[in-house]
Image 1: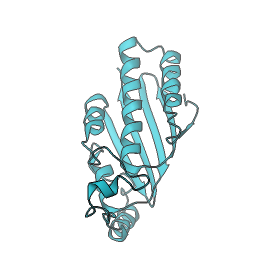
Image 2: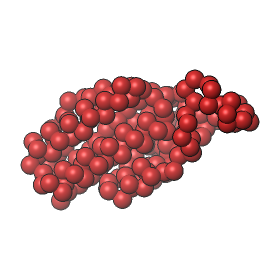
Image 3: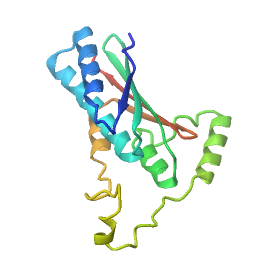
Image 4: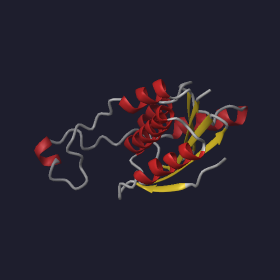
Length: 177
């Protein structure tokens, strides 16, 4: 079974649509309360992880299930830099880009990695009081703590990240058997 594809606009903070869809899938598949909560937790952490690392506003989310095996998919486009690429790949179980499985895939991955720009840290040397006056500057601590990554790794059976060009696909698998 494949769920509806949910388009999430993080600027509007409509993450709840993905959680509602997850609840529908859990109910349709007759999951127990604990299993449904785990599936919801995986959904929430996937959203949080991808949005905190990419900062993108439009994300596609859907779930595929076969028996008690669930595969949650998330896809977005982003402008890729080396730091973002590294953080995304470090979130996967294998710590490898899943798009780089074949010879041509590995070749493309090496080329994209070499072409990735350095992160723009041009505002890092400005005083904090001046930074707070800039539009769209985060007030909270900008360093990512990796909480979502650790929760996903503990809750899910497998986390795969595939990066091809500027498209990031995250696939998380959970088997309740």
